[in-house]
Length: 66
Image (cartoon, rainbow, N blue to C red; front, side, top):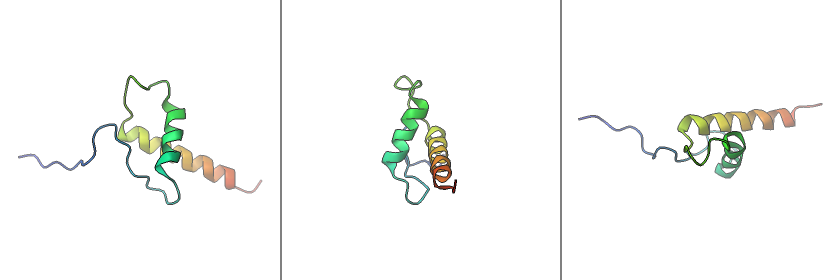
């Protein structure tokens, strides 16, 4: 019998890994990044992770001294 390790459904948004980043922030950023893909193809776990990484990078860039 195969052990199931994934607890979330495909396309379901995971909890953010980054402290201070909310699911809403990631959801909005993912929509902006992948709106051409939606609604025909649900976002994958990889899409959610990429959106969070890109969001965090843009937040870090905004907070850098100019």
